[in-house]
Length: 279
Image (cartoon, rainbow, N blue to C red; front, side, top):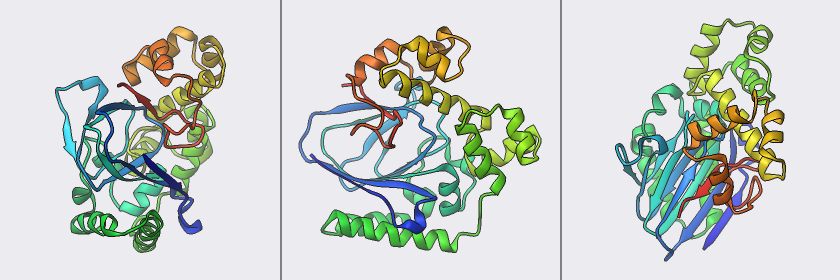
């Protein structure tokens, strides 16, 4: 398997976390649970498409996608492939995705829109260009150039209040204190989050609190200790959220991780728990 990760050029680092190029030419079929992480993922496929849907919906609504966007997710998704995958992932923060794409993020959270649906013909051309380049470094450079141009030409700029509020949510601030800090009421903050993040402040807080608990447990804490550190009412409250968001019990999730620490080769972001192999 080829797996190459790289950070974007400095001008993009407040918008884009990193790039990942990968190729599995002949592996076993696999299913992978994608846990909400507080980030946006753009998957660019050069080979076979992936079957993807929400874990909570089972097989009732499954999409077959080549290149697509996953944004505004507050529940886990399941991606399945037949063992031959080749492509790239771009991981962005939510407000960075809003700035680069120039779209209302809540409109992208229903389903898994294709790159063509998000970016039009230039999205399809980007995939063709990346697939035709001979090396990962050439592909990373093409992404740098394309995303830098998109950011420079973007007609939208996320409000500083939203950027600050996302940082405060990540720091565990109560929503009332965040509203007071940025000077916005509950309805206005929620509306701007749906526009520029793709989910409500409450949903984002729930996702990031779960990430805090998973990170603590997989770093060696008990589930009871993880619940306290993540500010859950108790361990039962944490177990409820794990099941509601991922579809797994805490014990089963930990079992499937097989001891992999947060930010392992499975994960899209340093220090976060973004993926579990289901088989």
